[in-house]
Image (cartoon, rainbow over all chains, first blue to last red; front, side):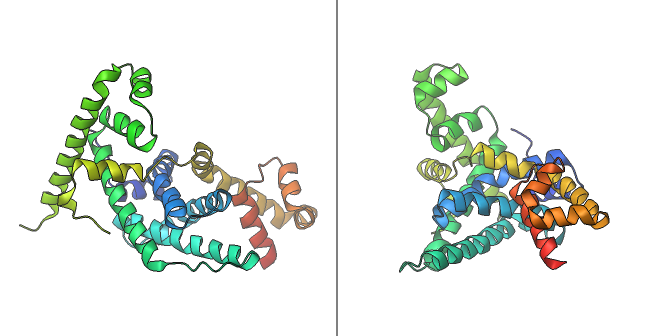
Length: 183
Length: 88
């Protein structure tokens, strides 16, 4: 199993000014912020990019204000949500439309993305080669053939590897779930 | 819809992973360069505080003045400098 730092440990290193920690921070949360802008709020690409950069700029400047380092994920989600809403207001001011923001739908999407981040964290914990294989197949939409060529493994074995890796992620999630249950 | 954490099956895991494709490389790199941009911003602000001519150049054409000073006029630097200049 890979040794993954908790969010709190990573935040603490960022606050101490470690450049490498900041790179990891961006790497860890970039998909989440990107998905909130795109899937949650359906921002056009250019607006999504602006919001994405502003989220990380504010996170960098305000990490010290975070009350609990463990709460960085919901804090980032809230920050992204606020900035997306501001951006949508700006867009609507320039080009009014009849489409209202459906806050309940957005809550649902954000909740599902939060689950996706939990799965992602479990995948990080499982580590390579599973992380690499599942990321390429599910997140980058690569074919068995491409994955096989890139990782130098027979394409005919990719499906069974994916299946075994999914089982490992599931076991990791089950372990977390049991571990977090009160005894 | 939130899923019970102990109720993830393999199909759900795959579906959830699909929701988080990587952000574009350029976006990630720009965000990772924020500490360097912050240092550049501090340097530009210090120079603007002690150099009235540079301050005027910033007010006249911010992006050009930043580039002329040898820094990349990234959105982070430009937006923060603009905010500071407006507050002066």
